[in-house]
Length: 165
Image (cartoon, rainbow, N blue to C red; front, side, top):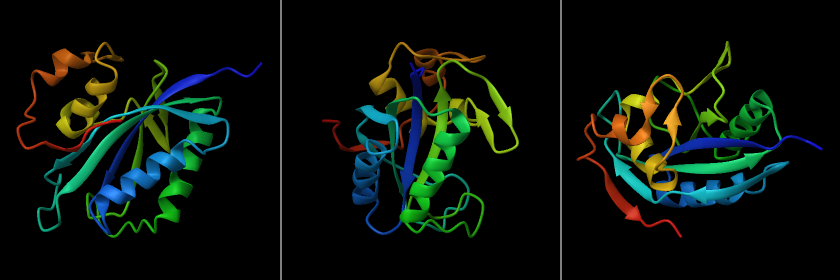
């Protein structure tokens, strides 16, 4: 029997109807091979990280159960970004869809293509708030409980756009 893993995916978009981009991406995550979407957070509006000369982002977090290994899941996420015509013009620039593998079980992964836990997630309210919404008792490897981390960062720029279903 194939092992099942729990993975958390950060979703973001600020181009071409970002709310619809994320809603579609959540449906598509549920259709990935050997993977099912078990929870999704509300959609949140946030200011961009980095260059401010771009539209605000819409963000969410999805919880998946998958029998894919981390790099295979990453390949699927990047292929999904490409179906949404993701273009990487500049670091932290605008995008139709950004999918980040935030956590994979309680593993710590340091690979040239993948760092898990995601390197900056503990600093980003637009990741932590939706993550805490769906898994409030979660701990980040090497960082502590998500609620403790969240209590020490600003989230006042975040607004819920749509409640999770």
